[in-house]
Image (spheres, one colour):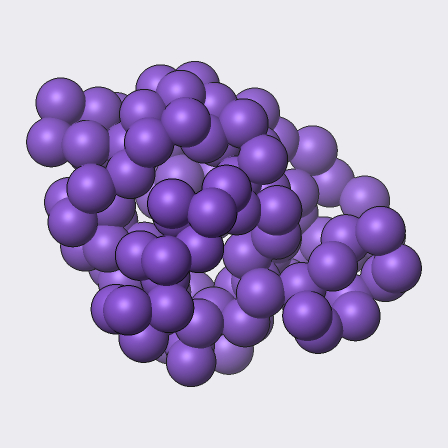
Length: 110
């Protein structure tokens, strides 16, 4: 798992690469928490286009980060999930709290 980030116009963009499972979840949690604690932004977009696998452990990672950002009234969005990850987000209900957006047209919901 690798997480890359960049700031653009008060938005923190994070790209998650690789597999999010029980072996990488601690790294993902700690890395995202550091990014969220140290930046000044109004929203977060997590790009999953380079995430190759996610199991149920990933649901917990995303729920925890959502709760932390919600306390600061910062919305979090998900972009470009694979079909497998899209299914997990749909089945778990994560899209109800982290809407899927189309990053190609500035925050258009899919």
